Length: 252
Image 1 (cartoon, rainbow, N blue to C red):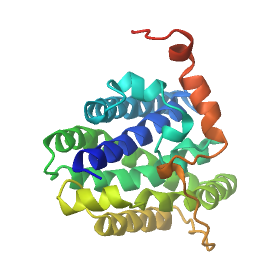
Image 2 (tube, rainbow, N blue to C red; image 1 turned 90 degrees about the horizontal axis):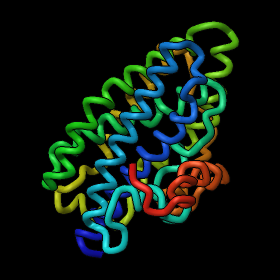
Image 3 (cartoon, one colour; image 1 turned 180 degrees about the vertical axis):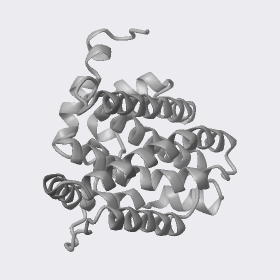
Image 4 (cartoon, helix red, strand yellow; image 1 turned 60 degrees about the horizontal axis):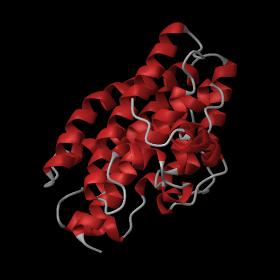
């Protein structure tokens, strides 16, 4: 595997994570529990889709097959998407949406912080821009986890169930294969040990304030990084890709 091939795969993963989570959050537009939260969720969705645009645009420049971010977003098959399983999970109730976001944000913040020091200037500049938005995303999701966990008996029970369900998908955030190892050796991307430590500390601190407990089981679901997705992914792509599939080469 060449450095270019490894970088394409890595950038594609980052773009797919943002794209699929942004698509999930966009489904909630007009369905927030309160007006301010409806607007906040929609804005976070737009941030993530904006990040996906930058990552996929860069991936397109590295690809031998797909050349534009639109082609990468709308013309791949399900098995060609490399996002983690966590981000494709359904919105469920509000606690599910917030917990999914929190687990992801707690990982993305230290990752983007480290990527600012990448020897790859394009990757570094994208990370710098995305980091500003992700700081807000994590503050927003962590505050809601605390509010729900330390709120009423019902809200505590629901957000705890969300944690129990979604935590088993979070381990895939730290997936490493030969592409990651190659890029780490060339100082293009950071090693994940320190990032995982920061992620774990953030999870611990917020859950403590929220009076929530980590699940005691050892279930770990993965496969998304290798193109093996949950049953939810096909339905998501059917909706997301509909316009481009129906009207090929359409441009806004």
